[in-house]
Length: 146
Image (cartoon, rainbow, N blue to C red; front, side, top):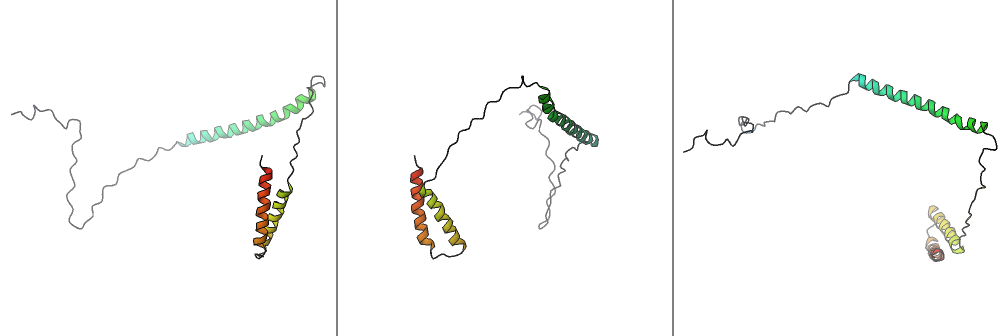
């Protein structure tokens, strides 16, 4: 029969079991022990001050450089001779004039009338005007289709 020392230890590398708490009497509630959560490391005060100062210096330097560069193009263009300035081509523009069909104009007019009737709470004329609006709207869509 093998001795205990001859057998390999199955629990090698495993922490030993913690002793179990004594069973509580019936009707009492046992609360688990609170686990302490590690607090996140806060940045030291000097590092926060250093970051704030770096940001302030960067903002001031950026503003100063930006304001001096804004003045440079005006000075540079004033010193150029007229012969070295590039000629500008006349602006080219394409004008596309869209025209609305009479059915679309009628649809817009009927829609305005419908909104006016609904706002003023004159609902007795709405059904008749709504039919005319639907007809004009359908015609406008057919005119706009390719």
